[in-house]
Amino acid sequence: MKSRILACVASLMLVSPASATSYDCALEGPVSFLREGETAKVMRIETGYSDWKFKLHIADSKGKDEPSYAEVIWPADPIQIEGKYPYIPTSEFSGVVTAISGGPCTFTERACVTMIQIVDQSEGKSKVMILPSAIAGDAKTGREPFVALLEGECAKGAVK
Image (cartoon, rainbow, N blue to C red):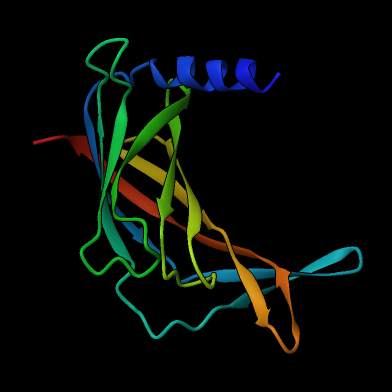
């Protein structure tokens, strides 16, 4: 079963986006969702960082042996996502990048994994949603996973 799943993911990565594209993105600061019974409470996460802007370049596949990839360009890299990663198209107008960092990371104690989802809208605009792995607490109080989320918009253009 695991080998079939890996083969499926590998084949998805071989599908290239329509063209090489570039995104200039701006995010709102991170928020967390805390479940309280049947509802969830949204709380701003204070990081001390205020410039939530980055670039995302998506390059076409160069054939079956080289999947499409995305490059996150964010010199300040406040949530450890800068680098090149496989790009998985989820529709003709959307895709997902999974960034992996050995740490240290903003929302975890060691390594981290972050999902970056981009969805094209109309008139050269796109929505972006970033879900980093996150834990709260420490050895004394105990650790709990929580949902951290960053959302924003991107201006879409051709890669130069």
